[in-house]
Length: 220
Ligand code: MD3
Ligand code: FE
Image (cartoon, rainbow, N blue to C red; front, side, top):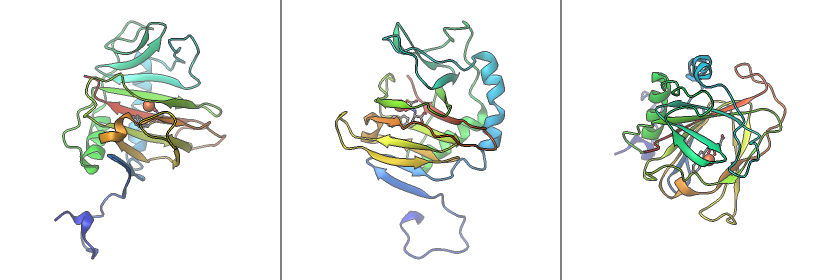
């Protein structure tokens, strides 16, 4: 019997991760990445050496307010040619940095905690939000296999995540996400509309005034 369903807590058992099932297939793991966060952030300089932060352009030519980069065997890019995954950074022409082992491990453990076994992401899109940045309502549909979840790790200053449904006009809930929170989006939620409300001024010891979000994806 899964310990999560036990009515009587076992005081001697290992603590279970705090997990909240908030939409079909979607799980919020509060603080899941808090202990790992300093180590995860140590890898950023080498990832940025291969592919620095940039404000991508939408296919329509408007810059995102969020700065992005990637690591993994593939990375998500956007420009006049459209949204897609590439093996090389279109800016520098070099391959994306390898996904760090501790990033892969955390993403796999989070997916497993949410009931998704053997999650092997090949891409991690890294988003950096300065105060005033936001991400408009959208779906993530540039991956080939929607049966794999997406795992997101929130680091630094807090954000309000906007989460709707399968249609753009569906009712949206607002979920506050803070440093160390991990969300696993699978099942029907994998294709639900979502966005990030405008980031407020703040400070965090590990990221200064920014929020950094790691989104792990299986692109192929
Ligand atoms: C729900 N990023 O990069 S992460 C994105 O905080 C993106 O940077 C936001 O949306 C951020 O595409 C939100 C959470 C997230 C990522 C992918 C999802 C939620 C999702 C895909 C389907 C449903
Ligand atoms: Fe998204």
